[in-house]
Amino acid sequence: MKKKNLLALILCFALGLSGVSLNVTHAGNNNALKKAKLERVSIKSGLLKKKMKALVYLPKGYGDGRQFPVLYFIHGFGKNENYLTAVGLDRKATALIEADRINPLIIVAPQMDNSWGLNSATDYTYKVHNSEMFHYGMYEDYFLKEVVPYIDSKYNTINDRNGRYIGGSSMGGYIALYYGLRHSELFSKIGGHMPSVKIGSRFSWFVYPSEELRRERDLTVIADSKDLSNLSVYLDCGEGDSLAPSVNNFYLKLLINKAKASFDSSEGTHSSAYIKANTEKYLFFYAGK
Image (tube, rainbow, N blue to C red; front, side, top):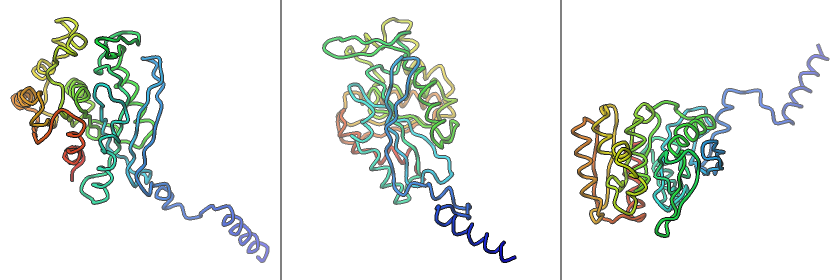
């Protein structure tokens, strides 16, 4: 008996020195983030045949065993994945989560280049037009078939449409609406923030290179052809934004087609400053309690 007791004491002492805990009930909580965190990830795209970047926001408490909803936030033309922090969406999310005003969520800002999110060419390439860079490739497939599965496999996500949202600004707003309306089986909430719902001459040659592709990519045509009754859509733009009339008209189009749509307009122009001033409203839409 004395030998057994001695062995038990030695075992407990050894476990204590090694840092091993005999109480595993709260092991998951020990891995939970004590504060929000940003991760930079690299996604090796087979479709684009290059490495693509993404910035991932993880909320305080991530890693405690729970699954979290995901917001994909798409940047505008000339921007990149760092737009997430440029407009302070990460900092606003942290403040609202800590104040218990929104539910914790993961935010993913993927690199989309100046692609308009389109499947525009089988092979990746780029072209300079009027001193601006445009990127061709299978960008829609890259996002839907590579980015989303990668995020769902790497992080503790709610892997269904009810826990997956998509939003973006300007070009990113177009992409969010284009993907969200066409793939409502993947997304339950769509945010178009000063979205380019009307494509002017600066970009129409790229987005609408033919009449057939115009019909396929025009958001108003898509809205008329889909069942939108299971979608929640938030649209907004600045009162001084030249896109304001077209965004308001698109909002009315969504209502006619029975989407759960809302439209907000406040002071501002088509700018990052406008987006930054309204991130709280966006987060209430995606994750409000």
